[in-house]
Structures are given as structure tokens and as C-alpha cells.
Length: 175
Image (tube, rainbow, N blue to C red; front, top):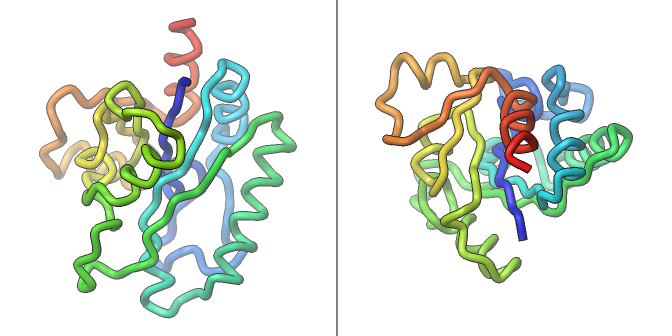
């Protein structure tokens, strides 16, 4: 099985310093929905692994987060793609949980659900936490990606792409 792990905010949808708190605030990054469709058509199972501390901070509740995800699922489906599952950490960094990236909890859940080793699964993100959690880290320069590339020491072997569309082009080109 070909599996790709995507972060959500800054990779699929635009980020906001004030968090995405409503479905109306969820705006896809240009090209990201078509990129997911290309990945889907290339045989990838697309899953999301995301920190969502806005829930733990009380900025949004589960019903609202589900409504935001429903909007995303529908938009991806309309573009011809599919997101298989969303794995998320609702905790704040103060809670010291095992699921907040870069901890391995979300990735462990993915491995358990799909019965696969993630050593061959690319993980796409825009922050250092996303990259540190990945076996095959891919940094996109959308969201916080530019800042991450210039201000942080990224893991060795990290591949850098302009956006999710460029990731999809590269992975679909390996077919």
C-alpha cells in the first residue's frame, strides 16, 4: 500500500495566526485539492496527521472541527480526490501528551489502523514538528514553510517543495 501523510493547516489549507475556528475560515491553498486528487489517482492513500491545539485552548469545539473537516472532505471529493482518514491531537503543548507531533502517537495510530510500517511513507508538512515526526520528511514552502526552512534546522534528508502540488508532481512522476 502506498500511503502519504499530510499535515493539514499550511499544507492543504491556508494558515492563520488566530487559528482556523470556523468552516468559513477554512480556505484551500491554490492547487492543494488537485494535488490530493493526483495523489489519489496515483494510488496513494492520503491521511492527515495534525496538531489541533485550538481545540485544547477552547477556540473551537469538536462539532466545529468536524464541520471544518466536512468542508475539506467535500472540496477534495469535488476535485476528484480522497482523504482516507484524519488523525489529530487536540492537546496543547503544556499537556505533554504522546500524540502531539513530533511525538509518535499519531503515527503509531496510523500504523495500527493500516497495518503498515511508515518507513516508506512520505510525510508532508510546513513546520519543524511535522518534519521531526516523519520517516521521509517533505517540507512545503506554504504556510510556515518559508520560516521553517530559513529559521530552523530541518532534519537531514528533508526534501523541499514549493507546495503540495509540487509534491504530487514529484511522486506521480515516480510511477
